[in-house]
Amino acid sequence: MVRTVRFGWNRRSRRTQRLVALSAALALVAVPTIWTIFPWLAQIWILWRTLVLAAWGFAAGLIVYTSDRQGRQLDEMMGELERHRRKDRKKAGDVAIGLLLQGSVLRSHDLSLDVYLPTGNEKVRVEYSSRVPLEPVEWTLPTGATGLAFASGRRVYASGESARDETYLLTEKEQAEAANLEVVAALPIRNEALRTIGVLSAYGDSNDSWIDTPEGRAEHEALAASIARLFIDVCGLATDDVTAP
Image (cartoon, rainbow, N blue to C red; front, top):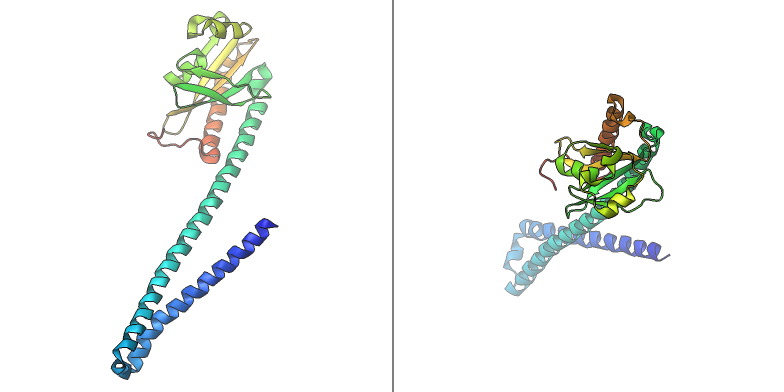
């Protein structure tokens, strides 16, 4: 009800503004036209001429003010629409990425999938995952296979002991948490300028070594490329600009 009343008031206000602007424009055109058609008006009392000139100037200023106000209102309206559009695109992108992770061939090899994005403080944080619910995980660069993949811009593969020991600078706590980990493959997600914008990590408690075969690597790379396009073209989380942060 409040939104309806507010919308009706805004609509009436806009109609009033348009009417005022049109009236002022008519006055702006009418005054010099009348004086051109009736030149004898120039002989009237100087006070009346001054008043007419002041009214004409006021009409001109009113047009400028009204035009500027309506332009700002249009900018605000378009900005609000664009903000809603970005939110809707982000939601759609989030759903699409989730479906890609859940439906990936990598999942059929008992691998979980996490997508990490940079936080801006030399860390990457998981933002999307095939795991439900999403568990908050961060890696400090270049710690772990994931942190090293982002820092170096290359794919990192670790299996067996190297996936859970100090090989990739894991702390004792991190090693304990990874005690059952058998394999992790972390692949940089890149834009068209080959700048790393995230990491796609595949990991599991068992390892059939498929992820390290040409077919497994190709599937890993294809998934990362698809996610990159969703990041850039739909979610608006990154760009293809090599210099963009």
